[in-house]
Figure (tube, rainbow over the protein chains, first blue to last red):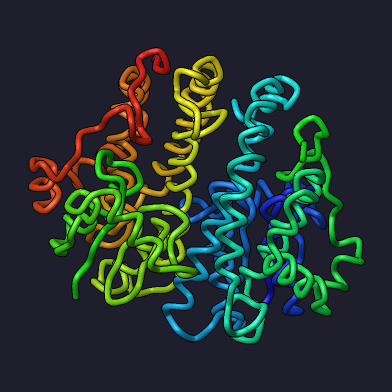
Length: 235
Length: 235
């Protein structure tokens, strides 16, 4: 089996939630648009016709193209035994993954509150207001929820004694928020020992550690979903 | 088995994407907060502790609480044979359902671009700008995608010869957009014969027809996700 991940080649974005578990599990994949360019990705998307994605990221294997992060992670979990066997656990993980997707959409909305087709600079006043509410209300609401989910008898992973795609996704949430809101995160991280402990465990996974030190990990930048604009941050 | 759907009692909102397939399939359920009040829902959410929802809607049965619309629909599909048997078809439907979830989040963002915790009136200038972009760019992008997905050899349903939860969800998208953007939808509906044909088929399902004529169907209003503010609409 051969996987190609298709995603915009210059940002972590939503693609990173797929790259991380692939790297953690040592699953071989091509990063399509980084190797072949955006034009190749566009041509490839069109080839899948009515079964194609609305937008990248999507994962191609055999003749299939699977889009939507949580959907892709479900496939990887099933095919590579990354997911727990019980249905109740799987549904709970999917629920958490979809809540992470909601957070990611809200993060993007902070710097693009009016429209994704306008530059940040052209909606900066609205973004300043959105960021204020997001820092004060939404970051604690989401992180409180994830912190409570991690209060597990089983240990520091969400489920049982091993990582799942939700652990790698929560790692990316912490990484992203630290990049985008360094002052805010420095002020509140102490309230989230479970979340930060989980983050550090993910960072120490051999596959993740090797990945983070490689040039396959695209640095955070102000074209992605998590963007550091100093004026949007405050403790 | 006994289902309780928990959702805000005065709006269709995200809960409607669950109510519709329950009604279409004739599955009995309690609408928890409409019968017992919001206080009962809050107390119930807290009881599920770390496995609880981030937010309504969620579906309770046995001892479980399943949150996130696409996750709930996956459970219903599996337990009531509403989903096709093949994994490729199921993944495709989940992909479409998650794309519908993205659209729903964007719709909410049109009237609340700055923050969900501010009144519409306090973010109206930004909403006017957001609506202009949403009408011109996002509605056609999403509807083009769903229209293409519905170009099926098998007939007017998305898959095979019967409805799935994605059909009832697309019905709700058309209903909601017609309520929120009557001028815009009147201007472009002719471009979407597959989508409107699918909508009409869903409306004619006996369970859906009975539901829409009952007081269980909460009327659209300006507290929900789809909100009709005339100033946000234009052809």
